[in-house]
Picture 1 (cartoon, rainbow, N blue to C red):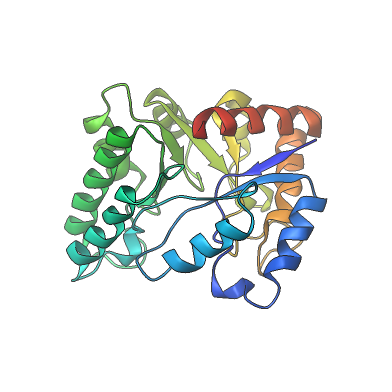
Picture 2 (cartoon, helix red, strand yellow):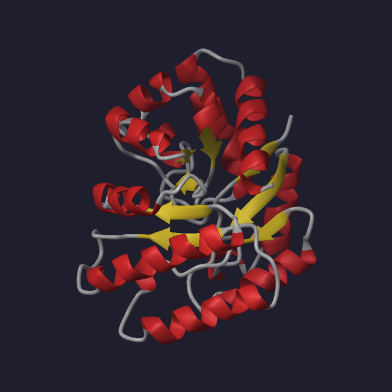
Length: 254
């Protein structure tokens, strides 16, 4: 039984002291692949170094996180874009919009999202979307730019059944993470009513650790706990969830 973590920032400073141990634990838990969304220009070196150490397991995505769109966003975006001339990446990310932390640069976030969606279409790779407190606004831009070639994941999906259906109709998968295990996470209706072929697993490590690790540092080895929660909600076996979500991730990032 194998799992794929479609979203983990395992190059982050939180893993400096036990990065290799974390990778080993993930392997022992059956995690075969980990996709690593970039944050900004300062995170690239650490991300690529980890990919180089574990090329079969760790896969880099390239993008600019909306929370890091600031005054110098054009310079940072130029630096990020330059990497596509140097090598191939499995996807664009972490892109999207965020209205939770700071609304100061929201117009610039929207511009950057449109640019990154165009990159995804240009290089024919999926885009991973951050939508904290901004699902509607993100969806509108994706729908505006969707020409049948844009694919990707609504990362850390935590919306309603209606919003899940809208994301799926737009051609995207839903990333299900540790929130699914929270007592008041609110994802049960979405998981119950969404076919497995539209779901992928993620940890968002080092954030959003599943129960019973909630509040602690998250890591990819906890992914089976998220899969088991989906299995319980849908009255399926863990193997059924692992098989389906792994196939979905492989197809998306092929």
